[in-house]
Amino acid sequence: MKLLKRVYKWIILSIILQILVLAYFNYDFLLKEHEIKATSYEVSDKTVEVEKKSVEIQQGATQLKVSYDGNHAAWLLSGKIHVYDLINKKSKDTIEDDSGDINYYRWLPDRNIVIYSVSSLKSGKVNVMTKDIETGNTHSYPAISGLAKNSEVTDIEFSLFTNLIYVKVQTSSTRARIYKFDIMDNLNYIMIFDSSSRIKEANLSDKLFYEDGKGRIMLWDGKRKSKNRVQIDGKASLIGLDAEDNLYIGNKDSEGKVNKLLYRKQDKESDSKWNEISLKAASDENDVIVTENGNVYLVNKPNKVVINLKNNAEIEYEGEFIEILDNYIVYSVNDKLIVDNID
Image (cartoon, rainbow, N blue to C red; front, side, top):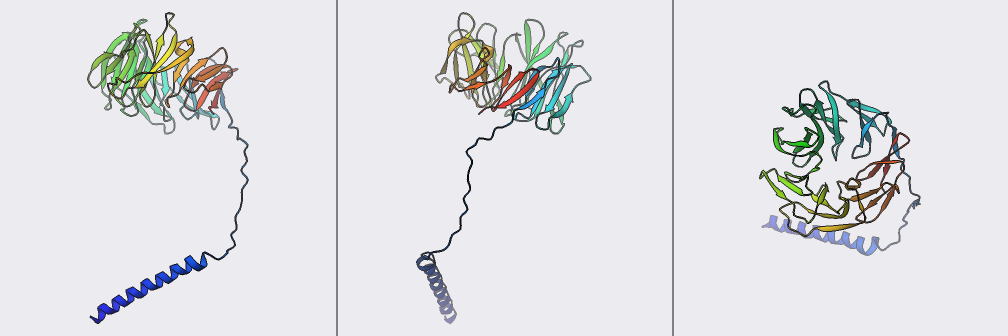
């Protein structure tokens, strides 16, 4: 009993001491004037101009493309991909293959990896591969064989979310085939269709959108293995898909020009209303570009300006337009490729 009383006394004493200390800080120390030293820094309102990145283009180079971060440029020359480091201003890599010429490539949208195809024209076989420009790591997919001679890849669509790859192989002047590599690298034949038709793959699900050659947009559902038409009025052009799976379709007029854009999210069997963007003047479908971040641009080549159709902001360029990415516009002037920041 005496021990318990002693413990209570120490607890009460501890509480009293804490109250006295807090009272001192609250009613005495904090109310006194203290000298406070402060340092002010003048912030300059001058905008720091970011230097444009550039590189001399090799004579005869084709398929000029820039990586997502604007740090690497590449082009195709003599069946090889030449990669240039725009930061350190030097050649970075030359990608080639002993089995044949590289005829097509593109950058992945969020990393410095190139996916490309090698055609063995005499054997009717094509190979699809990737190479990480930073690490040098390569990956080969199963060969696509049994093709007509002179067949070659003309488009590769991929999803970093599902790890599915769709490959368009042109087998004649009028026909093309679609193949798919699944997450385990298994190769599957999908369909044959018009060689001039575009394809676009969804990012968040196994869906491939394509043109059927008759002005209609079709959907191939890879999970259900079924085809369906995307229901819109009139003839249409497949413009693109952004990273959030918003599908962009161009309405065509009687002359085959795009006069209006329709877009909506394609996360499910969506029946939601289409959003519309009207163009001031009917334009070529190739001049309308959708970027990963959902911006939609119209390239006005005569006036050398690119217009953001969602906010009407204009981006000027010089020389010849090459491409526009999320943060960069790419063009060439006097055989020099230039990568300029978008404000």
